[in-house]
Length: 153
Image (cartoon, rainbow, N blue to C red; front, side):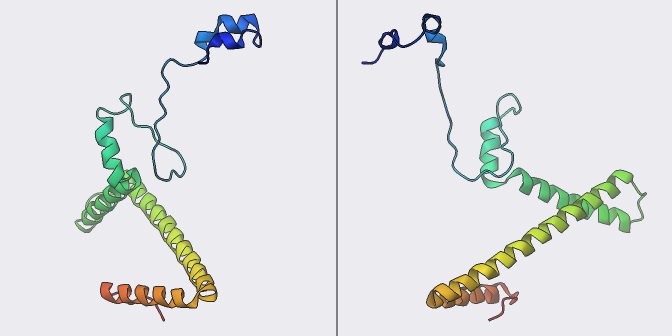
């Protein structure tokens, strides 16, 4: 069995005197599966009354998705207020401008993903024509079921 005494001849005396303080008494490293992009948000007892509940919610609805739904709902209320002739509010106008910017970024990101998908499909067509045809048929069938029909043969 290993013991700190095994290192006495290799380590300076000053370091050996502090040996017990060099390693933590309790080491816990949680490992979470999934992909983290950008900043990671830590939810703990310091910033949440119920971190386990909040973590469970985040498993199904990210903060971005939650904020998006709130923004969509608030946008509807702002538009209804405008139609009803409500007084202009700078905060509401600023919110509407922010939402328009966010929607623009989302649209650009979606367009970028579609461009990449087209490139990937073209590469698949060149490398494996049978698999490309199977996937193309499946995608077209899904588009027709959803009724949008935007995919072209």
